[in-house]
Length: 148
Image 1: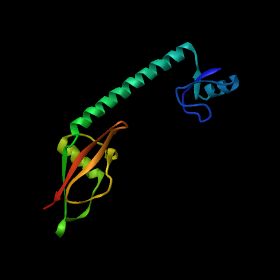
Image 2: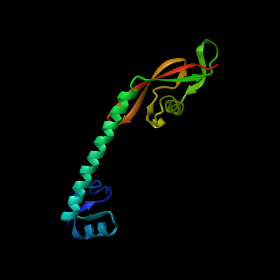
Image 3: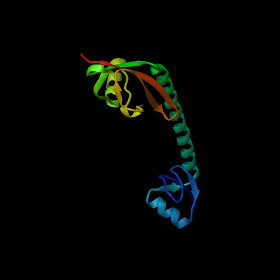
Image 4: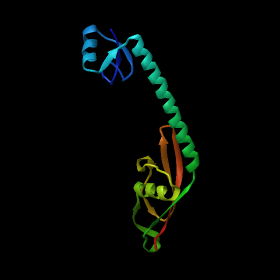
């Protein structure tokens, strides 16, 4: 019996795959709503869904590339309290950078997308990588100045 998997099953395959199983096992998976029979209509629906998913993924990639070009090499300004000789009290977190981006650029960039190699604990300009998509990574600069 041919079935279409509705969820990942470790011994059979991934969601959306068409696979051949024994009749009893196939009926069992269908009754548990983990698969559906691979009829002509269901196969056509699967093909249309995959085409739509690919189109949506391409649109998201395109949006990420446009956003990456827009924010590339922009500067976010933050201020920290600092003692003498330029040493700061504390460090700049990805949450603070995300909030500053929202205020200064009027853009929503999730703090989880910011990749800070090491904590920013000094005054000056620092580069921070931004992962906008699995295939799109760009760099922004964070300028840390002394707070009055």
